[in-house]
Amino acid sequence: MEALADLLKECIQEGINSIVPVGGGSINNTYKVTTSQKLYFVKVNRKVPEDFFEKEAEGLSFLSKTNKIRTPEVIFIGRNLLVLEFIERGRESKDYWINLGQRLADIHKVTASSFGLDHDNYIGSLEQLNGWSGNWPDFFMERRLLPLALRAYDGGRLEKKGVELIGQISRKMNDLLVHEKPSLLHGDLWSGNVMADLSEAPVLIDPAVYYGNREIEIAFTTLFGGFDSSFYESYQESFPLEKNFDKRIDLYNLYPLLVHANLFGGGYSNSVMTILRRFA
Image 1 (cartoon, rainbow, N blue to C red):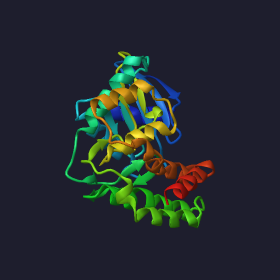
Image 2: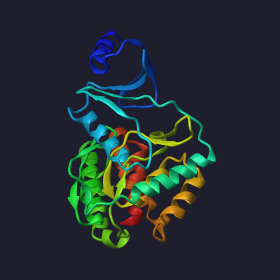
Image 3: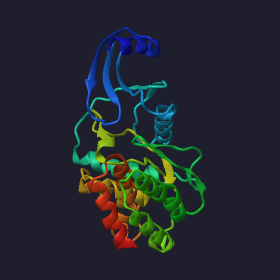
Image 4: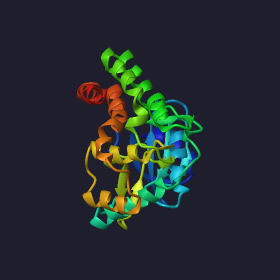
């Protein structure tokens, strides 16, 4: 803690009263830092790539600039740490979920001329490939599914048949997915990356932003649960999804499942194979 305190003094230039470890993540060590003036949330990791925290800060900036939802203010970006505004957790009332649905719909209305982003970033601790593409099915296959499937296969966490099935699906991906304008996406939207502040307003954290089809974002919210039904009702009222979205959910969730298969293997790899066999 002493080394961290010395480093933080250089970053925030305030007298530090306390540094308390907090939970909530499996990638970084996280701390609540109290100074004489305010509270900070600090992430520390000495094993991540050099630009890891820089890309997270850029993602928060993308979302913040929409003026649609609150994100933590970035205070300092370092090689091995990120200093953010500390946001006290509030209550998740029903209005909170309605508000979140409306605000996410507004973010998804922010568009670009192509799918992707002008730089790569990270989802969890894995590199997320971006670049620009004019075709969403191609982007989804070439920058999302195939790279992670090959990585999982090389790491012994996906059988060769899985890569072959993805190749089969790629030939009909244009017919499987709907075609819409690109939407600005949080990119890693599960219940652990959204919270209520003390005013019950939604806050987004830990993004993996890019411009993609918004269906992949809504599908991801269903994977691990935790989102109230009023969230989906509110989103649909604000920005209705194309018909038969429910039939595409599992296909989209191949991406976060492949992320987890690469990180953890086991049941996630089995889930990937089950979905691939269904769509191939």
